[in-house]
Image: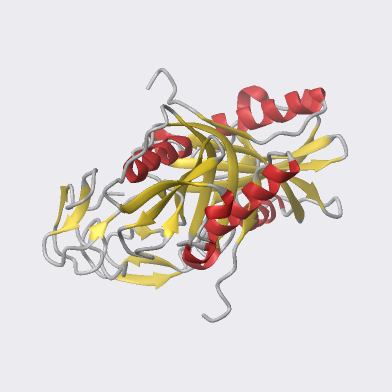
Length: 182
Length: 182
């Protein structure tokens, strides 16, 4: 999203370092409002059901047709856990109980932090939400590793299964660099 | 920050639910741009040095004159850990090694998520950063509990010391409701 004009008064903005600040910001030439841009949180969950987990095939861009864990942008007014549970319902029609944090992955080059939780499916029923083409239960051997939508989803799944086999449960906090080809 | 005008084209915006969305957004009447607002991340750290921790007296609003752990808004292009280390340097002139996540606290009513890490002070030197009036090392018995700047700082400190006495180290993920008087 380009910032050309002040959202408060509609005057032109200029990119400059405000007094006392360290970084250039979009500052209004007229009213002086500073328009900060900050990283966004994507909240999601890994829904466990018996020896399977829930994956969704994306019906929307980016990465339409690829598989993901239910996840999406956190909204103002909700907690991270609530956002993860909401996304589980919107994308997989899954009612879940959110458990421990599984991963918190900074993706600095796109200004996002992806946070995934363990989650238990309540009642055992899932469905195809509006943003999904397909939703299903997958065993570890059935995960479509080459058709996963995002690196954060792949890394979260890899660490989840590594911990599961090791008999431990940990919170994984790390970051992901841009792909080398970019 | 009020959103009255489109930052992209300067036309008026209207608050309405875009097609396929669930929540009202500021949508441009002219170019159709949707101006989302999302929660912001505040990253900070609890810096350990011998049997003490580092606290900063705030030189800026909000809560000028009250004590805090070094923390501030995460910027685009950095990881959460990097943001926490940067704030430690800016506010307490502390060079730190960021450790495990200590707390992740959603504050839904102000659209923020506060994330604190354990941190080790490298070299033992601290100083008074531009946003601080005073910076010092504090033992548990010396913490100014009634003069702490933010509930997330108080809760993080309380849980840190409870874990310390119990001989455990855990990541605390929870949320904070608005004060009852509001």
